[in-house]
Length: 215
Image (cartoon, rainbow, N blue to C red; front, side):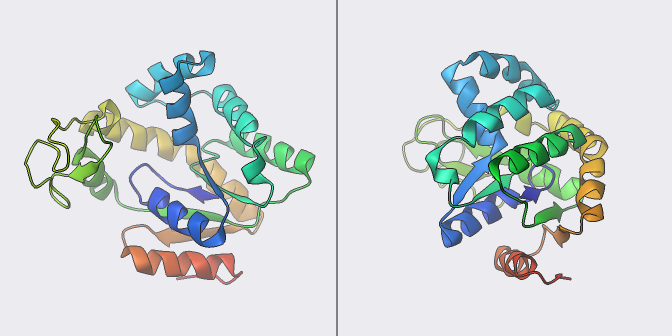
């Protein structure tokens, strides 16, 4: 599993690792957004929490994850991206793993300073038509405020606004610190610098999964 605050880069690393290993990447953010997009009962309940920057209640997240783990693509292994975020979620996951005859191989926690995360997320702009994502500083569109591909006006997600990001980070620190201690006590936690170059972080992830601690 990959754990870390929003914008720390764990999603990028999860995509790379899942593709390299040929396993499913399960992001609770993706699962939640899909439920919201499809207007499911759980999705409708989750939307208000997501829009305000608050954590979605444990029972909603756990229920959605339990359903996702029933899919066939989890049978040969999977990577959890952003779950668990609270101690009750970690305990619920342990129960699920035991019932499935599985065990957690490694929990990798990515870290970054709050100001770095705010700059990363508040600068994101997305195209509502084709889905292309830009960054106003690091990866701007060739057409300014319009999508460089299809020309649609770019938008900013509600949860990428600075005030919401800082609230999300505060909630993360409060709720997730016990999770890190939980996995540290079990000897499966590795902590990495999420601000290092992408390839360097990926190499350190590989080292962690090989059973060796990375610096």
